[in-house]
Image (cartoon, rainbow, N blue to C red):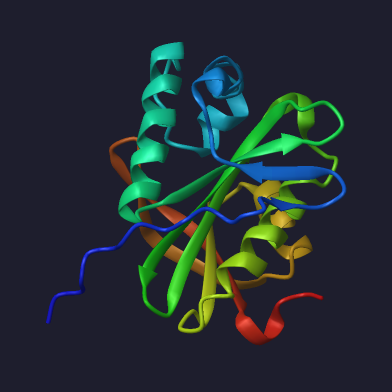
Length: 188
C-alpha cells in the first residue's frame, strides 16, 4: 500500500530559538550568504551542492525550500545568529516514514566551532519529536566527515555504524556513517 503524499506543515510559531540562534524560513535576501557559504571547499567536499555554486543556485534553493514547506517535503530552516542577525547555515528535516526522519545541516566557515550546529540540531530534534508517531531521528555523514559526526554526538545522537555504499554523492555510491536519536534519548 502506497504512503499518502505529505501534507503542508506550518513552520513553528514562534520560531525555534535559544540564546544564540533562531531557526527561521529562508528568504530571497539570504541568497548571497548561501552562495558564499556553499562555495566553501569543506561544504563542497561533504555536501552535494552544485560546483561552482552561484547566486542563482542559492535563489533556486531558497525557492525550493518554500515549496517544500507548502507540500510537506524536506523542511529547511535558516540558522540565524541572534547577536548579528546573520544567516550562518541551514538545517533540514526530512520525513522518511511516519516513525523516522533524518536531519542534515551545514554551517558557514566563518561560524564554525562555536556550537551553533549542535544548538540547531537540538532545537530541530525537540520540535520533530512533538510529532507523536516519530520514534527515531537519523543523521548521515560521509565517512571521514568527523566534524559533522562530532556535532551529532554533542547533540545526543548515538553512532550506529557505517552503511556501505548507502548514499549517492557526485554520481557515485559512497559509504555513510549513521547516527540516531530515539525519542526517549532526547536531551533535556
